[in-house]
Amino acid sequence: METLMAYLSALGLNDGDPWTFLSIVLMACITVITRSFFFISDAPWTLPSWAQRGMQYAPIAALAAVVLPEIVMTQGVFIHSLADARIYGALAGAAYFFWRRGSGQAVLGTIVAGMSVYIPLHLGLHW
Amino acid sequence: MSFSRIQRQNPAYRQGFIEMLTVAPGIAAWGLMTGVAMATSGMRTPDVLAMALLVFAGSSQLAAIPLIGAGAPLWVILATAFCVNLRFVVFSAHLRSYLMHLPRTQRLVVGYFVADLTYFLFTKRYPAPADTEAERADQMAYLAGNATINWLTWTGCSVLGVVLANYIPPAWGLGFAGVLALTGILCSLATSRMRVFSAGIGAVVAIMAYALPLKLNILLAIVLAVLLCMLLESTMAPATVKE
Image (cartoon, rainbow over all chains, first blue to last red; front, side, top):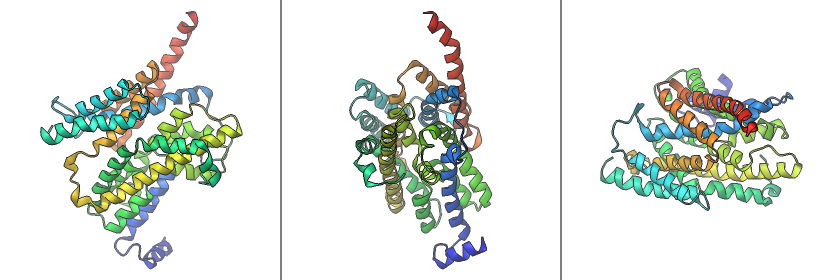
């Protein structure tokens, strides 16, 4: 560890706090470890077929779990008021997507439609 | 993932690239706001740039910034990054059968690049692992094209956010474009009643368990949604057979 620190100093990468730089490098390692977790080992095993089938439900659950709190919660609390630009922005985006039935550049359209409702409400009415 | 010429000539590379490109404005806005958050956190500029270029995991970056600022011990920062990233551990179980044909070093490189959006788009495009060599080549080319544009957009815009931090007040709400990009992908994945059910469970659990630390509400939401969907599938299956 001491040697690594000395090396980093020599490179001029950590004239301030060497621990901060080290923690950033190790955070990148955590990115690799977590994203590769179940395929790091070469050991021959396969996910049981029921589990592999169940995995088809993971992506949409993860997305909903990440997205919905961003739309209906503020500072960790469920919103109390309907005067919130995020609700109408997200609804407009989803409406565009389903209107186009997901064809063409529907996700791009979702972003554009959503922002064009969100921005006026947010900046104009401070919702 | 070797970004070899052969891979770039595969039509699937272009397809992966284009599919991610249409989501790119969302990634860009989100990267920009993460850059602003890093730059205004009081971390030194070289550290901020190192973080923007190396870590490639927005939520763990945002979770680590206040800890680094407060001088938290190294292990606390790393344990936090690990926990916030736990959803990727679930994704890696899903991706295992797609990737085990690669040597380990390449698998780790792929792992680094498969962030949320790449995982969502890849598993949507390829619902099952490949059976033939040609399909495998297509899948890996798609992954390479998709991840390339994701990394370039995210990292480029993070750095831009760091540079322009003083000119982009968070009050503009640009980060909402990232939420909308995810909303669009969410809609595109809602292709069956069971998947809509999965999304509903995921959303309700994540909101109700929001108070859990380290984004563990997300992990709980994924695990419960998958388990409930499988339970429902197994109870519904006999009924379907009867029809």
